[in-house]
Image (cartoon, rainbow, N blue to C red; front, side, top):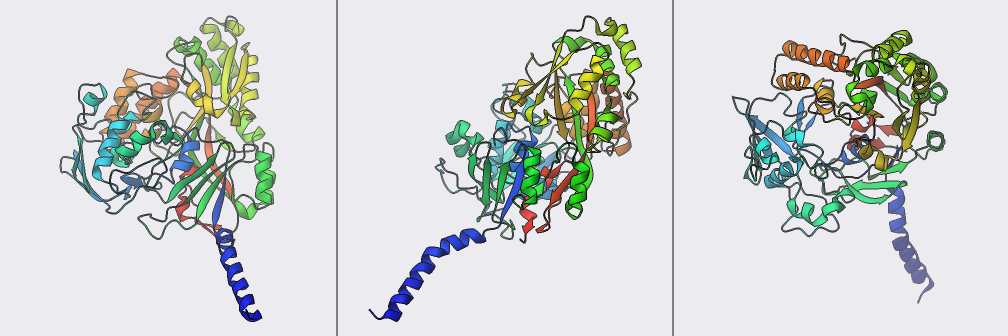
Length: 531
């Protein structure tokens, strides 16, 4: 064989062998830090931000929300009509939308999303069995949903597949929260995939979103790849996302410095200002919609029938010291109520300013002078917050009242289930609203005992239900104000702080725009990386 031909063949062979390596190196991957692993990826039982930050990229609903205006936007439904009586919503679905091709699922036909998939999904959501669904409230107010949930009907009368691409949802009465908290955000689920996967749905998600699941190495990395069959061919703008589990903040900071992470979402204690100074051009901050709180168990245990004790604990806690001084302004001290200050009705009639003398007086009125007679209390916290300085401050503030608090940190894999159980009397938690509407806090945390506090006040329940059907903003906000006043008097929480949404992103990142609900609200499909 001539030498030149031999060299040419070798060159072609090398090019063929190297092509896959070059392609892999050219892939644009977002390196996104997470502080804790998501508990699972099942959308029906998802309750934490750790799950949402991943699932937001995998699953889509009928509609989405403009998080700046709370107005509904087309998603899997490209258009809809609302009847004159505001009771029936008819959705026109996009055609040709495909589910991700998931291992372990043998499809009965094609993978196209059909109206019947939303009907099936609605029935999965609509149960009080918390092992199946944590969000039956999505179907609240849908005609026949209550009867179905109670086992009095096999199906939900008010949700019907008119044909493959037309879905009708009928309500019992008008609901202004249809799109923000109701079935307007319903995700589809194919029955064959749900039944074949069973519990494996927790780690094998079947979505339609711009990214699809690839691999999950627990407590290490969770990888998504761009969905090449996505209905919007222009998205996503990167080839994948690698969620990197970095629970230790100093480690994450070092990785960010080295360019190993594209974002940084939390700063080591005592270093917030120095990090801002170091990365001034990378730093971003907006007011948030998260509220941090210590929740009392309201239906059982020591605190359940002791409102004066709960109030005393509220007055005893020095929030200003924690958040303005020790935590260097990482959050706003919660000097109002359970609603973030940007929301209507956010100033209740009862406000718990730091007042240790008033706290001591209330304990005495409750029959526990100097804390005498109060048993030692265990405060449960999730492990990633174990170093939060609010904990020793609260511990010391209560010690000055004669109350002993022991702090127990638990891994997130068990924590969020455990705190709903009767043996947990006080716990650390938080809630991120997605839109600046009181319903996005009150309906999830104070309606019908849905929060892990199990707070269930009939007067509050009735006010919140009235607000769901009140379209006049002034009248609606008055209802929320009344509910907020009652809640603060009952003191089911020690409200700790309101969030600031703060982050660093590398200069090669463009298009990353979170909203007040937190950094997890940013649409990663819109992000570009030009490194």
